[in-house]
Image 1 (tube, rainbow, N blue to C red):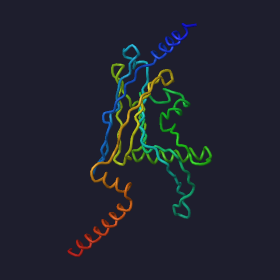
Image 2: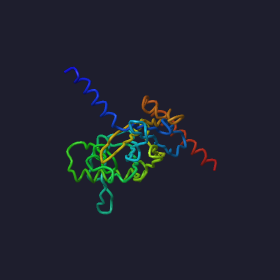
Image 3: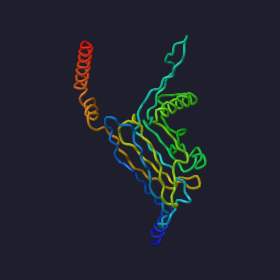
Image 4: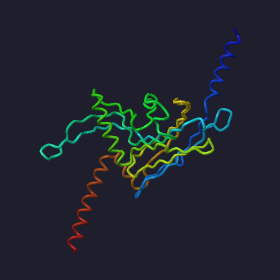
Length: 251
């Protein structure tokens, strides 16, 4: 009986050794948003090794997902009535990502089934948005498609099939762009190693996107001192109106 603990430890040790070693990295862990910020390209890269330290990338697919802070949002449909566009139906989501980008070594449909893709949110079709209240599934899909289309056109959502490249069956890399309108906060970069349709290993890195300079002062003031921010905005508006009047009067 005394041998059982050792046998169990040996079993779990051998089982753990079957998992690959995934080492992710991001080219920049901090992105500063200053005046004139036009966006930033991030390089998500790393290595995948077998437990014995040999190259292991030849047997695996790699998927990387960069996700921004989640937010509660409400979407409204526009409907044309007698030639005028009016707000029609609406619905809300509790946890819509402000930014979502995915890159994979092959099209995601060739790597995993829909159930696995939904569990790990591997792709725009599999985002889990958590609707507020009861909503018809078809209606939810319609609003979700509208959100994906809207944010995709703004560069906030994207998906790159074949966007991950492998080198020497051990190194991988993917380039993902943050647009100028990106929201500040902590971004999560997840890397998944997939074999035979199963996620074998995953690892996470983080990127902090934050305002600097005058933009940070304005954001901090608006959040921490809303009264002062309001007074400052009013004073700035009055000053700009006075300055415009003076310039036109001189002209």
